[in-house]
Length: 490
Ligand SMILES: Cc1cc2nc3c(=O)[nH]c(=O)nc-3n(C[C@H](O)[C@H](O)[C@H](O)COP(=O)(O)OP(=O)(O)OC[C@H]3O[C@@H](n4cnc5c(N)ncnc54)[C@H](O)[C@@H]3O)c2cc1C
Image (cartoon, rainbow, N blue to C red):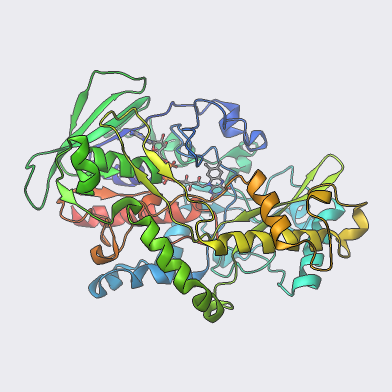
């Protein structure tokens, strides 16, 4: 949506956006943030092992938390590219400008500030399409400050005004992507980038309720491979196929699960996967989509403890904590966003309506479970330490399922409890990673798929490494930057 909107600023460029989901801008399960999670068990979710929105908003069925990762994590992206691609600016400085370009931030009002919301003006954009601020119904009980103060006292982690400037290793209250001018409506991708211009941009057509089934090639078997357009179908399991011809480029933005599936259906992928399905391999990308996941997991495992020890100070923000208050209970949601386990996505049928195999491989790198154990144990310590402990009459969950002891629960007991009830909040990335080809990359710094002339990927698939953050702010930044790269190439 972001790329389509920016490209169609140029009246000489025509854009067709094909989206599998519906135009559900009037559905409160989408636009009302306070209804978060109502869309999960509906047709608005793809229902993969990982959640992903199936709406014209993309995954804007999300929690709307507006966060950015650690500056060094973005700087690491450039190190995975060819040396001569460093100047393209896939690093913190470059991304920070584009993340801000997407954003209009409204600083907390007096009532939100009284509840603890703070911000730093230079960390935010002031004229972008996505509205970001704090909710009118922001919680303001004593738990909030008690939670912050307990973490500071107990862990030495500092309380920082605003984690959106590249230093998120702190305790902080995060803003949301919502629009206070519109009664705290979710500021989704479609509301931000399409709604304001859709009646005036005659060069942009959005086709909802249709799925792209594959890319079509004008010169199959040649390098560079050139896309002539895409094949698509109605969103129900229809056998009728249509073709859209592309004069310039095909941009794939179907998310980290469906993008690799579309590419594989189009002959881009590991020939060992495509051949048995009868798909002619156009570009043999052996390490695509994690087909070497188990080897990579072993390599990560082998290096991780030494690396973690050396990087402990720089890269420590592994987790995000959310204090949660439901009726009279106090709880802590743990969001381990910086995971090391690696999975993969592989088609197993030539039918585009058949979901691909998705191997999530949670906890295949033991450090992920170690971190989860450390986090749950820390949550127990936080709730039972002052000043938060003065608001609690005792622990109900996990309670006796993880007996307390001097260690605050044994590793074995925590591991058993976590594995019994684990629901991932990891955001999938890296299934068409922006990296050198010899590292298993799929796109270069221009986001062009290797050995293609005019096919780019612009979504979470290209993000090569996990971040200590939710992804939407970063992905708006990626898309804003991609739009400029594409415009410059015309
Ligand atoms: C439940 C949940 C909670 C989250 N919470 C937060 C949060 O609080 N803060 C935050 O920053 N991030 C959050 N995220 C993460 C964030 O929303 C995603 O990482 C981000 O939206 C991914 O963007 P994307 O462009 O890669 O893919 P998406 O936003 O998923 O967009 C891909 C689009 O492609 C469409 N599509 C797929 N296949 C096809 C096809 N074959 N043809 C046509 N269209 C197709 C899909 O329907 C979808 O609309 C959350 C995500 C989820 C699912």
